[in-house]
Length: 168
Image 1 (cartoon, one colour):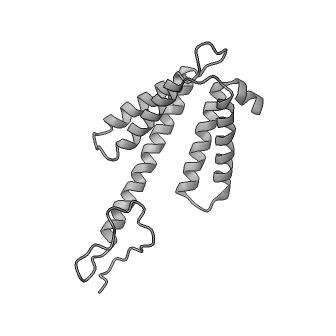
Image 2 (cartoon, rainbow, N blue to C red):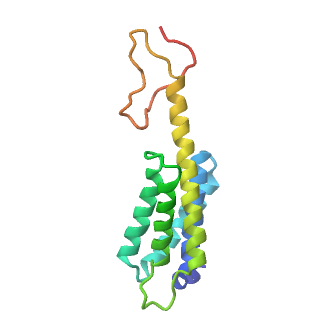
């Protein structure tokens, strides 16, 4: 399998996406050990395979910009226009990832399926996390002095428990 990953960019890309999706599954359902272990293993194997290939830095920048735009959809609600543009940039970055003089390359259907699928899964999980964060703020009561106990500048808001009744 390692020889296949090092010689075939399509296999390395699909292995990377499978590893990231397994890590998403572990983050969504913590405590199940196998998805996290296999996701980490697959991700590290594919990163090692990509490290041995001639990559284009501009393609990596395109893929990173596409991923940033997919996540920016949460801050800029534009009816999925920003996420669609991000997914297109991500797919284009994945498609042009390997230098043109290399004997193997990432094929268009592989880049399309891997990029669009990963962008959709990322957007879906990020929206779930944002919805959970907003619901937590709604459930947390105000203190008797009128101060909101949830710090709006703390993105993780660690150590607080939401209660459905008023604290006096």
